[in-house]
Image (cartoon, rainbow, N blue to C red; front, side, top):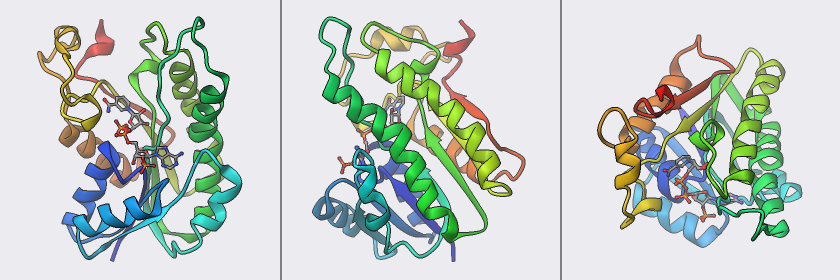
Length: 228
Ligand SMILES: NC(=O)c1ccc[n+]([C@@H]2O[C@H](COP(=O)([O-])OP(=O)(O)OC[C@H]3O[C@@H](n4cnc5c(N)ncnc54)[C@H](OP(=O)(O)O)[C@@H]3O)[C@@H](O)[C@H]2O)c1
């Protein structure tokens, strides 16, 4: 029996990935900031899923929050605080939450869980295409997604022989984040003529998790956006 832990699994891409793993019979632990919400989402997903509260923006609490996780075969971390802000409206408190979540929180969660890794366990952490394609207001987002590249390189050495990779999606057209948004301008900039999908992102997550040769890589799932 394989155990997947998805931090950020209560919504969006994390929830989709967790649902896929649950659907094939894995034991799945999903985590978000709120215990009641995590429990409710887990119940909706099925009997092999449990929900726990973990707040990556409060790194000192992470070890205690993950206490009940006994084993990890696949660790996926998608959680993000992602609110664009330009220098004109720069919000220091939000920037600290965003950077802490992605960099300190991701690292601490992996540190805490590594002793519970099964023999073939591997890790996928999420960045985003803003790493390579900044836009006005993306300074914090571009910075923390760029730092994810450094994180996987050093953690690949520390976690060896376990593997860690980063997945950087372009805008995911059918993700809840963009529900109701007019994304025509982004579709026009995507060579495949449409936006990428959650299913394609989940496929790429499974590839990184399961292919034993993939380690310390940034995988861009972008429909060709970076070709331009
Ligand atoms: N969707 C896209 O088009 C897109 C494109 C490029 C990159 N990405 C990246 O993909 C990842 C997932 O994006 P998404 O659209 O799926 O996001 P989302 O729908 O906003 O979901 C974010 C998840 O993270 C959890 N979370 C937020 N802050 C947390 C914290 N401090 N501690 C623990 N959990 C926390 C949320 O749970 P609670 O609210 O329950 O705490 C939720 O489950 C992000 O890293 C994002 O930057 C997404």
